[in-house]
Amino acid sequence: MPATPSHVPEPSRTDPALIRNFCIIAHIDHGKSTLADRMLQLTGVVEQRQMRAQYLDRMDIERERGITIKSQAVRLPWAPTHDRGNTHILNMIDTPGHVDFTYEVSRSLAACEGTVLLVDAAQGIEAQTLANLYLAMENDLTIIPVLNKIDLPAAQPEKFSEELANLIGCEPDDVLKVSAKTGLGVEALLDRVVERIPAPVGVADAPARAMIFDSVYDSYRGVVTYVRVVDGQLNKRERIRMMSTGATHELLEIGVNSPEMMPADGLGVGEVGYLITGVKDVRQSKVGDTITSQSKGAEEPLGGYKDPKPMVFSGLYPLDGSDYPDLREALDKLQLNDAALVYEPETSAALGFGFRVGFLGLLHLDVIRERLEREFGLDLIATAPNVVYRVIMEDGTEHIVTNPSEFPEGKLQEVYEPVVRATILAPTEFIGAIMELCQTRRGTLLGMDYLSEDRVEIRYTLPLAEIVFDFFDQLKSKTRGYASLDYEPTGEQSSSLVKVDILLHGDKVDAFSAITHKDQAYAYGVRLVAKLKELIPRQNFEVPVQAAIGSRVIARETIRAIRKDVLAKCYGGDISRKRKLLEKQKEGKKRMKMVGSVEVPQEAFIAVLSSDDSAGPAKSKK
Picture 1 (spheres, helix red, strand yellow):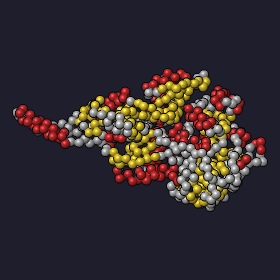
Picture 2 (tube, rainbow, N blue to C red):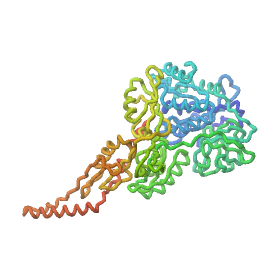
Picture 3 (cartoon, helix red, strand yellow):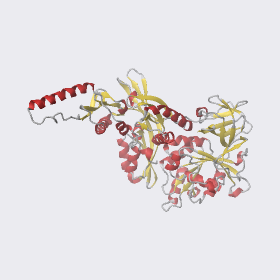
Picture 4 (cartoon, rainbow, N blue to C red):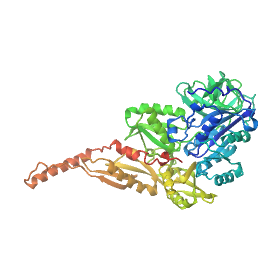
C-alpha cells in the first residue's frame, strides 16, 4: 500500500463549516476518473511518484476497460484562493457512469450535499448525464455544471455551455470549463465547490447517527464499511449498533480515506470515513442502514434507500461439474463486494448443477462473469439472459418465473413482463431510424424534446426483454454510434407471451427453452432449429429437431443419419444379396431409433446459450 504523504494533516474532528461533501457524476467516458486524478495531485494527497492514471479505479477490469465499476470516496484538503488561511476538507466520491451501476451513483448522492455534473465538451449531454442529473435533483443537491476536455480540437464549449445552462437553469457563464487531462481550470473548480456547496448540517451533541453508503470485503480485515456521519460522533473502541438488523459490534478501527486508509480517533458531524469491526459477512453492513452507539443510541434511523433489484437473470454453469463447489464459493466472495448480486442454486437436465444469478444489466453480467473466470480460474457457460415474468393461471394461482423452465403448463389468464422507460439522445437526422427500431421492439412513444437544433431526446416505454439482447448494438449501428441510451424500470404490463420449447428426437431440452412474444415465436423457433441442425453432429439414425409451443410444432429441421456403406464388401453378384444387406441395415436403424438418445456436444450449448453474441451492451460503452 502506498505510504501516506507526510504533508497531509492527521485526520481529526473537523469543524462541519469547513467540510464539503460532493460527488462527480457524468456519462461513461466523459472524464470523471481523470478529473479525480487531477484533484488528488492538486491537493497533494498523492505524491507525484506514486501517481498513476485512474488512481481510484482499483480493479484490473476497471483499468483495462477504462470504466468505473465501484464508487470510491477520498478526503482532500484544500485552501481556496479567496480564503488561503482556512484549509477546507473536501470529501469527494468518484462514481460509475454506466446505466447498470446507477445504484452506486444513488448511494453516493445520498451521502453528499452537492455534485459536479461533468459533460464532455466534444460530445455534449448524453442519456446517462440526464439520468444522473435527475437523481441529483431528486436529492436536492447543489449542482455545479462543468465542461471537460475543452483542449480537444473537436470541443464546442459555447454550444454545450448553453445546452447545459438551459437544462439546469443557470447562465452559460456559470458553466466551468476544464481540461482534466492538462489540469486547466481544476483549481477554479475546487474553489467553486467550497464556495457553492453548502456545509453539512447536523447536531454535534445528539446521539450518533451515521449512514452506510458502501461496504467492501478485505480478505485480511473483514468488511470495511464506508459511512457518512450525520449527527453526533463515532469513536474508536466504542460499541455500535446497526439499526435495521440490531447487530452490535466493537469499532476496532475508524478513519478516513486520503486516498489510502488513515486511522483516526473518531468521526464527527458531516465527516465521511470508514469503520472496521472485524465482521466477515458484508450482509451485516447493509447499504442504506443507520449506525448508532449501543449505549444511548438514536431511536430514529435515517431515511435509507431501496435495495437494488436484479433486472436480468442468467444461469451460470461450470463447464466441469466438479467445479460447482468452487463456483458457489466464488459467488459468495463476490457478493461481499457487490451487494446487488443475488443468486440461488438450480439444476438443468442438460447442463447439470449451477446457479441462477440476478444482475442489474448486461454490463453487470459481463463484469461478474469475467471476474469469476479471471479471479477464480473458472470456465463457465452463461445461458442467454432473461427477465422476470409474473404468470397468473385461470384458477387464480400466481407464478414468478425467472427461468423459462419454470413457465407453468396449462391454461393461462395473463402474463406480465417488466417494462422500462428508455431515454435516447441522438442527432435529429436519426429520429426515423430510432423510432422504427423502437416500434419493432414493441415500444410506445412517450414524448420527444429538442435539446438544441440538432439534438433530440426521445422517450419510449419498452419491454425490458426487448432491451437485454441486441437493442443497444442495433441502436448504435442505426445512428452511426451517436445515440446514447438510458433506462429505468417503471413496472410491468400484460403481454401475449409464450414459451418455445426445443425438442430433440421428441425429448424437450430445458436449456434451450425461451419465453418470447407470440408474434416473434415462429421466427425464434426457425432460427434456433436451423442453428442446432448445424451444431449437432449426425447420428446413426435420423434426428428431428423441432420448436414447439405447448403441443403445437412451429418449426422443424431434420439431421440426416450417417449411413454406413454395408455394400463395400459386395463385388458384383446378385442384386438380392445387396438388397438383403440394406434391409438388415434398415431394421437395425429402426431398432436404434427406438432406443437411441441424441448426444449434444458441449460446443452446441455454448454456441446457442452463450450470451457472448447477444450481450451487445455488455461489450459496448453506453
